[in-house]
Length: 205
Length: 205
Image (cartoon, rainbow over all chains, first blue to last red; front, top):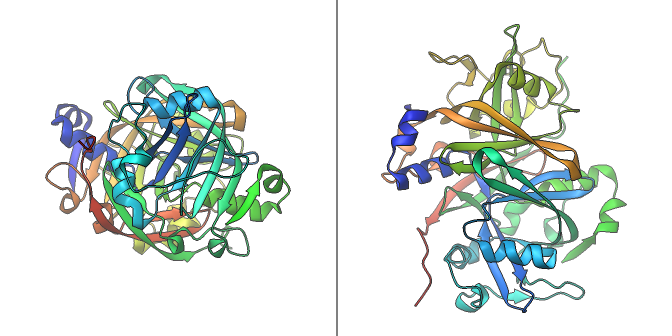
């Protein structure tokens, strides 16, 4: 095993450090966040930090640093109070990753990639067409994490759209059957195969 | 697409709802957190919410609800100020998942499963033997997320141990080559295959 202590990590070359530390937390969720500005400009951007916070009310969070990119996503969410979360699936990984490029606000990533915006009745924000899981999210609060100067944006699920073939009888969504991917580090995309479900665990007698 | 709005979600059967909402955020990191109590009792518990917060200083966070399980992990972290994060790999998924069973504090999950505790020089906490990525973490702060009554525990990497065969020249850790898994929902474990790395993206001309 190679060991890096905190001094080693601090003195690493910057690119090596961000690759290493961004891969060391494990696989990450792969989502596209869809937003719209008050002027009607659409935006879509890749995020790998969407995290389950609770099921009742159904709440998710994600991390961003408001003083850096992707500012457009953050500004649109604060202005409009709503956004969409769309799962990245194998067929769109290249375009999904390209949405991390820093385009000016007036350029929509939907126009410079093959990602297609989908508008649904009653929802203001764009979704990513053909994504097997799409959610309309309502902004709830932001929580500042002082030690690292980031915020967690907390949001509730207003509408959840799921390809119904993926839903098991007990509510489990089989993401790998929908070709949903996971992110490794900053720029690695991995395909998945569900190995097993183990159910609720009780102590052995 | 099947659509669930917030009213539908609220009125779902509880088990269906927690399975659905726990699977809908995407794939999750699969980690075992190792702790030790002031009395010297070891504990290991599965978590699926470890999230990258920043690389400088190297900081990760995870979510828990302090008033419910796994209380032992939380109490040990607050008492001792340190814990370990260990990636779950294919060979140990069944035992890793069993660590979610509610054992009393004096029973170590290392004793009721085939998971093996590894102690490293200069570290107080147990690691999970053979895990391809192991980290010694120092507690930094906890951030309360009021809208959902959960906390994010924020911690810095003190020591990062990585199977050196997994580290690319630019610092990227190839988790799938280490058989690191991801979690789907509450109890699904998935194996991964790295498809591609796309690098840093700049706007198209």
